[in-house]
Image (cartoon, rainbow, N blue to C red; front, side):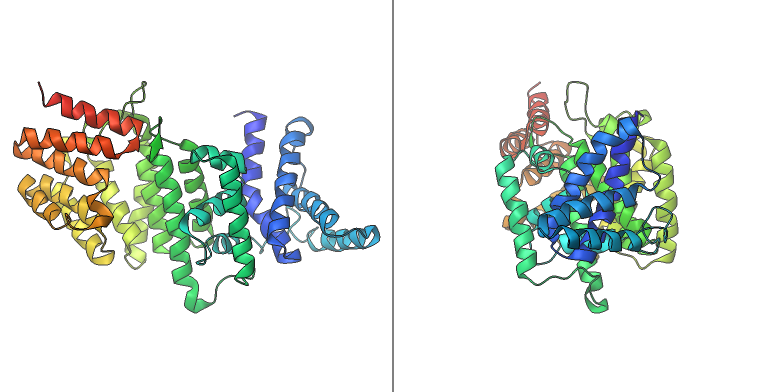
Length: 409
């Protein structure tokens, strides 16, 4: 890893702590976030050449604080007094220049995932404020115009301010629900990175990597929370398959055709160990069950040895914990593999009138797969082509068209 890469990783890890320190001290979330971005840019330019300061977080806080106070106040004498006061508050009390007991990352995540915001705004603001990504990077990742993304982030900040949100952890009675929103936002970021919903590429690695990094940060602060651990395990297990999910040409490779020697088995073993501990010590939740399903796939030496009855049983549990049409759609696949395609098709029939899933390309793709297993090749071909028309992902469209073409042979 180059010096520039090491600096980039360090800066990204420190970004939410620095922003949290400024917001906690000064308020002004919008202005503080801009000041931190300037400090991060300064570090990215200076540290590779000059070396990382002895206390990098204190350096970033000091630079961002100066930028912020320059912006907020024209009285230079008052600015110097506040800088001295803040330097004393963040100086020798901690190894890195900031009191060790203060890490505001989780508080910042709760703020960025405020329930008044739409999921799209929560995702964008989280990537900007907690992830340290620039507006340009976020827009590129989601294939949106930069101006559109900038407006979304700006409106999100204004909405948080209008809602009267304060920089503190939610009260105990709101904590679980607010944490659920945070985890859902991280899950959305990961999913868009793992299988992009549109564009020419199957993966947007910068998003899946960022989602895993942020979930690790949350897990470090809430190590005994079973759902935080479950989400982290789920992400790591899925990401471990990434090297085998596409050919060099970018063509999607389905799970049952992947070269499992390309999977990251070190990551798989570490994730399964964490899952085993979590499921033995924490109340069961939906992310843990999804992680358990991913673990069954990950530990099967081949597609043929996959324990589909166990996966079907886990989907039964998942549907009781988190009933929604996408879970039922996945359960149809598991039942089709465990008990035969007609069992899976019967589950699909119960979803045909549900607009949340019936128009989704995955519904047609699952039906095509089950019809193919049942021997209805004409029906399978028609549904593969229907799914191909519905997806916005070029790699998925090519794969589905190829599956349809195979049935012509």
